Image 1 (tube, rainbow, N blue to C red):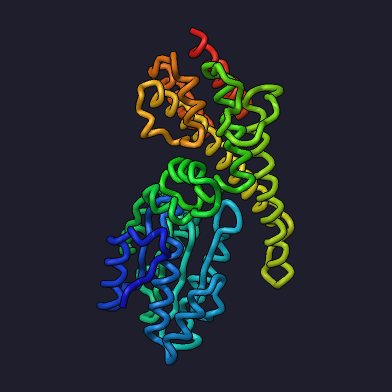
Image 2 (cartoon, helix red, strand yellow):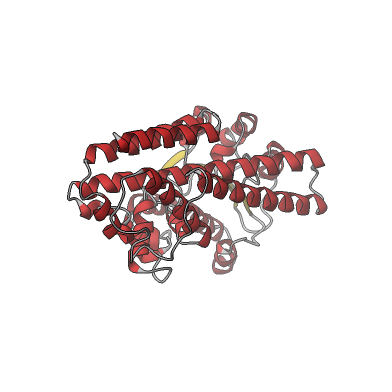
Length: 382
């Protein structure tokens, strides 16, 4: 019996071998799938859960088919996703801890999957400990995390680890075929840091807008090009930058955060209407947390894209165009880097990364971005 993975994650040979062996000898009661976002943990967890449920079912094919659906109608598969910035403590208690005490509705197995397990508060993790230590024989738990260090050691030590590696650019490119030009797909694959979901986002309308904002910031403070921006292969003409160079980047993050807040609020209100007890204040707080989290993620990604541009400038100035990430902007990079000291571009990338770390400390975003622009302008004007 083999755990089938989607094409983009077929290279996860170690994970697939470990899960296949686990099915052959009988699965453990708890697993921790750990690896970067977009590396295939979610797809592997669904496939693994489907095989576990099929092994204890009267009709294995039907049980497997229903378990593989997303969302799944299988009554013995519980899939918990954080609605906001964190998992709700009561949801973990009700849908995992208490539910695990009841026998399967059909077949002989129950599977509980907790996505983004690092988003569980310490209270939820501590409450889950007893279930991990002494689960009923028919219960199997699968925790997914891209930040294993955020989990309590007592949680991680009670789970069998399954490691997932970042996806190689070639695997991501194959999965994204048809979603853009070959150069754009190659760029998204290299900027994604092995995260298929991020690569897909970069090829979306929102992702393209964010990348444009990040490049406008980098170009506004970086070395001039003898050609007008954007160059022939750089895509649609963008309006000139008005206001602070970082304004559009921050606006993109704020708009995305507002959308995430509204979507989370709507989902929580629907659950409240369906009978899940949540006060209006709880709904508002969770929605705001989700919005802030998404806003921070998008701003951080924008700065990461900005740092990648400066990194590519250094590569182009050194003649190492084969390692450039922004492959669809190669001609523009070469023109700007023609008389550039690579050390300055490398230093610019370091300054952007330093700003990302400062934002982790909850400093003012406007002041941090303004300071970054000042430092970058001074660097390239020196």
